[in-house]
Image: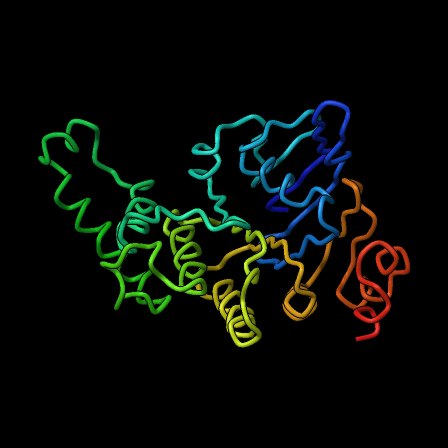
Length: 256
């Protein structure tokens, strides 16, 4: 397995947001994490990426325990994410948003960066070329000089994914990527996620409330309710699971 959580727990005072979660994602899988608002889904992402310290349990990535590592250390190991509320550098250009992320894997040292000598020139050229390629893939090359905050919502979502991919992840965590999108944008997003997995050989774990997205692209689904794991299975199994229907889906979605 590429990602494993072993009895992962997070408590905020007397509130247990995530309780002894066992989750496993194999290389190349596209897995969904769903549940009602407040179920603990984003907390799971925050735990995996080091934004929130675990109260108990372990997180393993590619066979290495990453529990307690800093976010930048986890990113350097190959985990990237997007956020439910888009977190771009909105006053910076589209190009600079991606270029900054590309610097994670630059090979020149601190003094070379200060003096612009040695490997600096070659490194910056490589970073710029990589950023432009990613922007072209996401059809953002025509707006690369525009402030990121000036882009339409759907384009900002694409930019956030492009920035995450600039860190060269093996595992991509998508937190409600379809939030705020219209049906056409959602359909395009589903196609983009499937394409991303093939193009970049990615493993993807996503949180999403739009069941058309979850049921349409995920191979397996984990369901949380009040921090507890209540079901794991294929889309067909989850759709017909009585406990999931009662806690989250409802009869209409289950039958649809």
